[in-house]
Image (cartoon, rainbow, N blue to C red; front, side, top):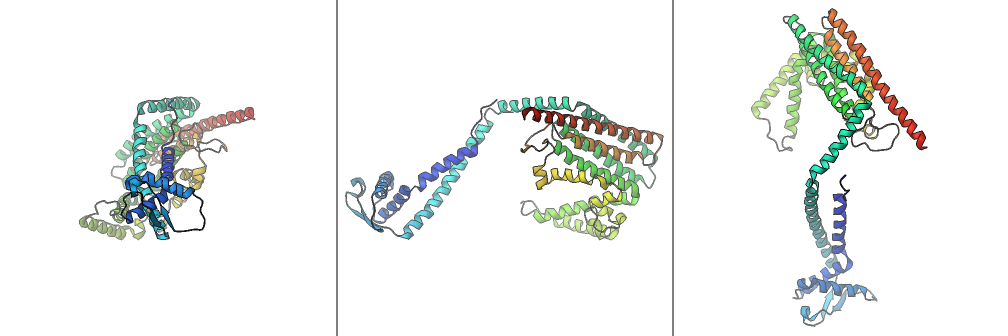
Length: 429
């Protein structure tokens, strides 16, 4: 293991404090004032600053009577040829020197930042292969332990993802051949795309789970849930809604273009050309004329079928009777956003441990695992039940049973981990 080094910020802090102390001590401050006063009398003592500082220290050490702003100063012959120099100080002198000091300290700080940043970067890059090899070995060992612990549910989830991918491919091909001239080909097109995307996101969930990132996996499940609910509504409401969903690609593009225009100058990007802007405005007017003004809103494709000018995802959930997963959706949202709940509550932390999770963990995988299995099953069943036949009904049942097994195994492993943790706490108590 590499030796622990002082943090770069700590090194800078000590160096900075030393620089500040050397520049702001009483003797240093008085020496700068004396040097300025001597220069006003035609005596350039800048090359003898240390001697001036010694004189300043003597003045500060000498007992003082009544306060006075004028005194005689005797310096080395090399500086003043042995003559006595009268120095008069006032508040303006002190204020001016303070301003100069502030500027000098700021310059010193910038120099320190540049020097120490370069040093820190060089230190980070030096022997990086050794450091990274150590981290890689630790991570590989952790993943092996995690796979041993969660082997059964992860294997079942992998089987289900592979099965849903195969079903999606076969069903997509069959439906497109059967419904090529049918009005509901738009439904087939949208639902197969949503199911395919859900399979891909399920693969991301698997990757995160296998590497111990339960909260990240949960946030990706949220996307699977959105895909599933959207597919359910489109399949339920038919071709008109599917067509609006496809057309909403343009509405999303218009919104993105308007945001780009708003921040292009700030980001130092080229603005949208007048020609392209004109096209965007014409497209927005055409969509509004065809589908109504609410169509340009988020989820505007569902505004008409839900009879809601400003629908939300929650209203789409309610329309397909799937609001029961809203608590889990909120839990997943905590991992996506920067709210307090997501900051202090992490799925990867077991029980009430008061710690900050900055890496992988082998606990908390059950929520994202079982929910991913459920959502993938649901969206694949939506696809299977578009013009159902014997095969689609059988495979829907198979997926339902497999999803239940995935859930049971994930919960079983989590409970086993929790029992071991309780036993360890008892032994330590």
